[in-house]
Amino acid sequence: MPVEPRLGASVALIVEGSPNRVLWALRTDDAPSLEGFHVTPGGLLDALDGRLPNDGGEHVEARVACLRELFEETGILLAHGADDLDEALEGELRDALLDGDDDAVQRFEAAGLRLRTAELEPIGRWITPEFAHHRYDTRFFVMRLPDAPTPSVDIREVELAEWIDVPSALARFARGELLVTPPLLGLLRGLEDGPLDVAAQRAAYGASAEPAQRWEVVPGIQMLPFRTPTLPPATHTNSYLVGTGEALLVEPATPFADERERMLRWLLEAKQGGIEPVAMFLTHHHVDHVGAARDLYDQLGLPLWAHAETVARLPELTFARVLDHDERVTLAGPTPMTLRFVHTPGHAPGHLCVLDEASGALVAGDMVASIGTILVEPRDGDMTLYLRSLAAMKALRPTVLLPAHGMPIRDADGLLDHYVAHRLAREAKVRDALRDHGGPAQPMDLVPVAYADAPKLVWPLAVLSLEAHLIKLEEDGAAERTAAGWVFV
Image (spheres, rainbow, N blue to C red):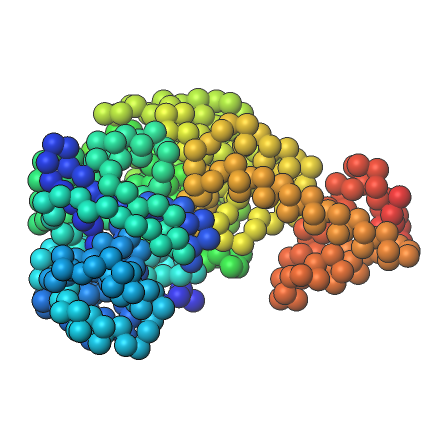
């Protein structure tokens, strides 16, 4: 079941001018959520938020929360009376909030402070998609300032807070250099050509916004997660709509009727905005990636594309185009996009990743995930090929990985290196377990040793991965399969 979202609040400080500027923060790589993302300062509502002195306003606790979090994360205190504080007292007040001291409210009152909540303008609401382990129902506010106060970072969850001019921020996003949340991207675009239109922001990210709304993760690539019959801990598969005019639907994933209807609405809304889906593409043949293909073909007439190995495994579907390794397709539009298809077998024989050559974003299918790990099993999978494919993906120098399960991954090199190291470390455990077994072994005999660090609940899947490791060890000359079982060589 999806995790219930917790209430949060976030504030965007802006200084309007030529150009407009925004205060943004970079979440640390070990933050509990949105790690590695550029965000506006904010966090969860706290018990203190109903007690700290303030100017009031609709959803006042959320307003207090975002100004409290702003002070904690960046040292910027937007309160009446703040100009009269000496530096030492201001530091003590910040520490009291960070430490959750019971007397923090009394300290604020004694200092004559009142948070400037009435000056906040609500611009929307965003609910973290259902697949996330940590989910937030966050109200967003903006405050316009005449000048830009200097931030001082608290490094527990934020490694950087800085003022950025809007054109520079959007240029970095366009080059695939960073990840931003949908509300922040909408805010930046709303500030691109002049003063902020608050009504337009509310229309895009208002209180009725869907919990799993579409998300432009890089320019020209929208993501929307759909509930699918996938392997735990994942619950959803991400579908991607790639293109600024002509567009490719990557992963028509869900077999569930209500989710297929939501996917259809997404595509029809995209068409109204000038984005015209011209085909569907399957990264591979597994059930949690193909569930809506037949339905969308019947309703929209969208042709289906895939690798030959995928086509061979889905005889019930009709394919219009068979894609080869290193084939390129250019999608027409206001910003034409050239996509490069890269054959990455290992998880599945026909697995293809898709590289957007302009941004460097790699739609990675089931080769990686930000939730759990990838199953490589002996029926569809091949551990040797999987490791080679991970190396081939790294050689592409992707700026961001867009997986089928979980959030976008900013540190592509780091994750790919981690995946290779993890597989080789597991291979060593399998080899040692086989060596120490003392005789022919069946894969399940080795799981309690080689996967001692994994919950017993996943051992039925672990035995499949272990067998794939044994096959690789046999190819490497370190194991042999006999009639009695596997033996160490």
